[in-house]
Image 1 (cartoon, protein in one colour):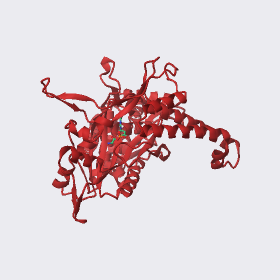
Image 2 (spheres, helix red, strand yellow):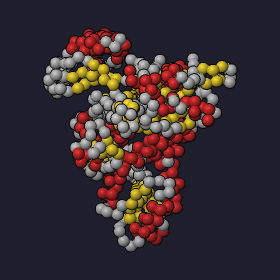
Image 3 (cartoon, helix red, strand yellow):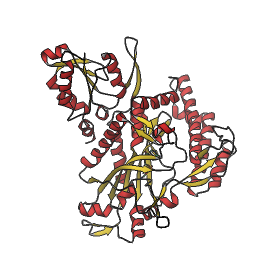
Image 4 (tube, protein in one colour):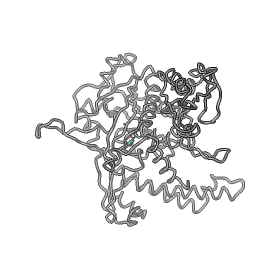
Length: 513
Ligand code: GAP
């Protein structure tokens, strides 16, 4: 494959071909930025969710989980600031009629300048022996010029966003000579704000109804239940409330497959703390979340922290864990120090006190909050992108393998009878029946063994077990490892112990403590 774009296209078609992800309502030509998870995708998604949930709720005795409703009282979204401030600046190109997020146009432009700098550095590093990168960056005329241009745009953009100066945002686009990718023209409309929440009506009789919103984040279901959980669970600060569930955003530009969807799933945890301790807890959760990602064995170079230039309306510090998707480094997870913004506002709008009595301090206060928020679909994409590989084998053939962390694999074991006769299928079914109470297992009889191995490699099955003539004589089978392709002959009754260490979530969770 020639480039990242081809790799990404290949990934999307692999997801469809092997039952991971389908376009929603595909028989009606689909619905933009809405996707369905297929038989393998659902299992993988469940496993990622489970890994997150257990790492939060099971490993931490001071974190509990809830499942709040998607619909909430509409005042929730007034109090949270989403009615007034949850919008993106949009801009249209008058010639192509294509709509863009103005901030994304500028960020992508700056990213292109930064890529030019990296290219210069790379070129020079190849040319000069004993290359001093720091020195080069601070003295090379071309690099300095690019850097100044990127810094100027960033500074203007930050100021414009902070002052909500949409005319200036448009001016930056014009001054930077940003063109529409479709028409190639610079014929832009003014920039305007667009609220991302979907609204609908509650109640069946017109006039009797009330506008309500599909939640744009799961976090508010946690905030409005803060006291319910604290009191009924007799929780002491610091403590956390975790939740996974659907969120909805009417994204202006919904591209890049499941990266930016209009209906997606979040895994969020709000950690309630004493005011004044937010800096140390913010650092703690940055480190803890990075450890969670690193335990999956994904190349550390593919992840990085990125501090926010513009803080959301609720935050006093915020960063993203970015992942290098096939279309570049992008946000995978957000870690936000949300102050007491949400609880204070809910107290004000509801008229109900949202305070905690701290027995150690003998005083009441509104807790501060550190939030960790990750998109389940984005995590799914990150895992698929870093796992899908085409390998050249020693015999000159190729295989496509999804080297997903074994504990997250949709199917843990595939069992094959070498032939569909002579008692081999029955023996294979015995093995299936032994393993199916602990793991998702599958059985295949069709095609030659090589083809069956390839099909399982493509969906990431860590182990394939083959029942052959010898199995019927001495109760042994061959077990093939997906990654090494090595086959070992083992006694059937040793299989559960043999695979448990690698395929159970426990193996991942143990790396976190
Ligand atoms: N409660 C805070 C919050 O919602 P966010 O940064 O807007 O913060 C958190 O979203 C995470 O949700 C993101 O890091 C991303 O992984 C995921 N996410 C946000 N919008 C998304 C979308 N349109 N499609 C898929 N995932 C999305």
